[in-house]
Length: 196
Image 1 (cartoon, rainbow, N blue to C red):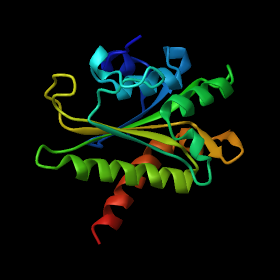
Image 2: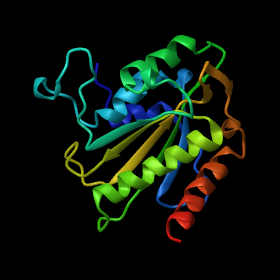
Image 3: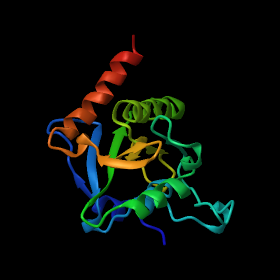
Image 4: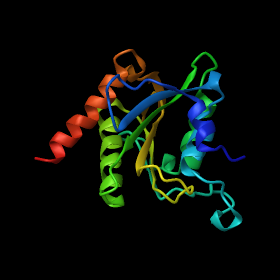
């Protein structure tokens, strides 16, 4: 069943730090109807897929401009397909753990290229993987994906548990009160390092 971008947004509690522009972060909650798999599909499908979008009956049809899974270090490659990573998380998710995902969105000016946007959000997800042991799905949305005129933007959907080679472990400290500010600082630090 297709989930519209608006419906996916309703599954997420906004935690964007005050005064921050072109950056949004929040937590997707089971109590708001989210599951990691359904949210991942929603990000990969900004418009309702048609039969022409279905390449393989075993894979999710994708209507987004570009995407990539970034795994935490030493996590087996078998988790690379989103169709395996997110259902694996859902199977291990405990009912008392309400958060099923960290959703970060970075908005870009119209003058930037797709590959520059994608390179930055992949590098950002790689920082989250290396520094916080998070596995993430990176998705690029561009005007035309769903007949919208929004600015090009990249979504980073990170699983909220540390992802170790042995499986999912403790919740990330990024879920605490300082988490949104730390997520924004990671982007600022990345941009400062990339421009040197």
